[in-house]
Length: 151
Picture 1 (cartoon, rainbow, N blue to C red):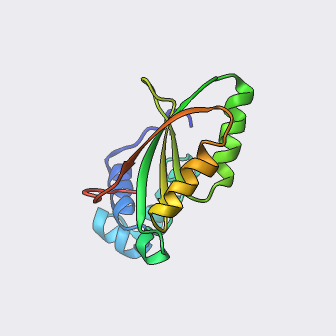
Picture 2: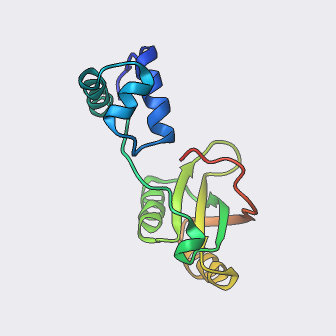
């Protein structure tokens, strides 16, 4: 994404859509003080420029039978391109991993993982995650509650 210049109106649009992605263009235009046509044009431009990357529903994991949510810190044993590619391939094929973040510091990645119960989590960590050849260490933190989520 190149340097995109956002004015105050663009920022208002982004803020409203971040909270209410399903808002109608008419309601959005009314809230930010534009008529519908220029509002729609701005939203389209923000999408085309990559500021708005997409729209989606936030799903309650427990409603889908995924009552355990954890963050798993991962340290790789080696960071050669082939090792990273193999790790990323595994991440993409494992549906329990809902987010994968490359981080700085003592860790390499932080994963958000969701499973149905503790036994499924144990199986995932021992049989799936630790079976990836480049994974040297993992540390798992159980998420007790989500105090804030904007995604």
